[in-house]
Length: 145
Image 1: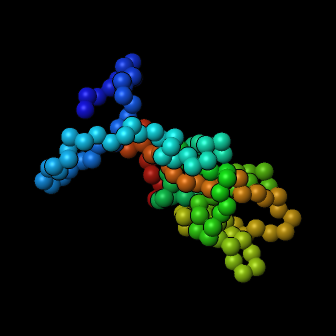
Image 2: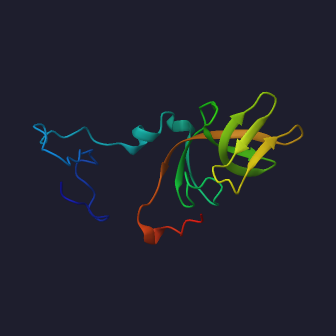
Image 3: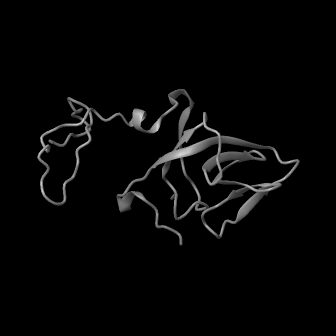
């Protein structure tokens, strides 16, 4: 497959190609259907949003500058990574319902957990379904451990 530059749009769109690290496949000349990132990550296109992560509360899972794919049509399940508003602030945390309380838990132990209490203004804004991360180190800040 020939590389494309920003000034030269691909003539057939992006395609998925399999990388063989062992013996070549007899079907290596077969091309997959065009790749649509929208179709891949957006089950509910009208309810799908993209947000850039800031802060380190979800390290090592989610890094600053990762692009989060948020689906607002889904209902949170235990352990799901969610975007929530709590008292007017957006948070990205894991949704952990307990017997009597709901907790929003950071993956970074330094950030801790937030117990949602009566009187707090709170809403699950959406569920993080995918993320886009640059693997080019020059485009990423150093990871705070």
